[in-house]
Image (cartoon, rainbow, N blue to C red; front, side):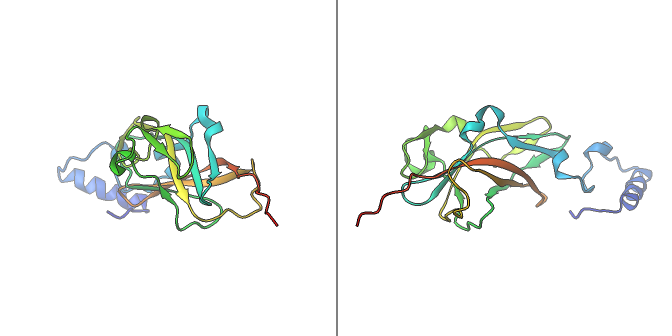
Length: 194
């Protein structure tokens, strides 16, 4: 269904339908009005886990993303989250969310970044729960874990704050996006042998 941007024309269509006896849902639930994305979904860093929000250099040269988030549907109706991704200030076409360890035949209770010793409890991770249906007041909160191969530019030093965009795609192909802060965590420079 395409969105009608002429509210007057849309209101007239609704009036014509109601005049013919066709019942319509309450005005606040009707689809077709272009709304700003911020009012439909709240997307923010999960405040009590800000210390965990990081872009972590991994031992194999890739970068792990640990992003604690909170997502809530604010309005009546439903949002079906079909896809999600993060966009750092550099291009990384290789970025992907970690797969559910239950599907990989690994330890089903823990997510791990490649070649990283830290384990993340599956119940705390959103990766396997991010594709969902949210009704008014429904929330998803927890960690999103991903990996990318593109090396961040050297201008982003250890402990620098990096602004990334978290985007979720809904059933209407509408992108809800929010900028979130992550901390850069680079490995200590290795001394080259001569």
